[in-house]
View 1: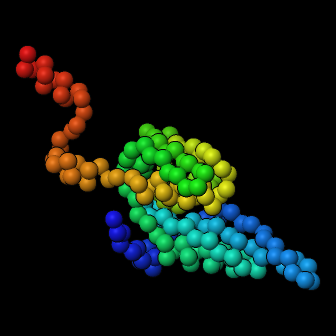
View 2: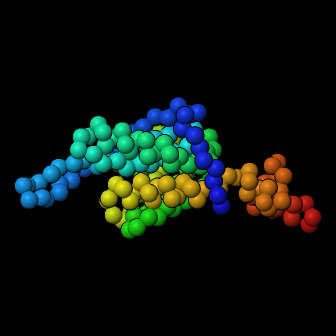
Length: 180
């Protein structure tokens, strides 16, 4: 499924630094240090992007990461400040299990996963990161899960149901009682 490109200039995006790492390159004269930064950006309404930047100074690395993240914006479905259904995202050895939460529950997630949720606009969600603790892979696993989410209205249309119809078992039981 091909997604349309989202222009960052049209949106007011906020960014959040997830992780900054000092990396060293050993050369003849000693060590050369540089910094890599992992940044997530989002508009607070179901659009999120991730970027990685590397430079000899921390602010420059962050700026590069923000630029890259704005080029890689993706949209996912939101439903009343939470996700429409339970989903698991996987990347490498990392898995992130995400569950929708009732209104007022809050953002229950740790570290890199929490940063993604904060900029994307999710207010009520429960998530657990499993596997490795690498923030780069954790963010990619979170985005993998968010991209697999299905919009409930689209699924109903695909199934040939009207928006007012429901697929709960309770209604089916009531119809069966009425026939007997």
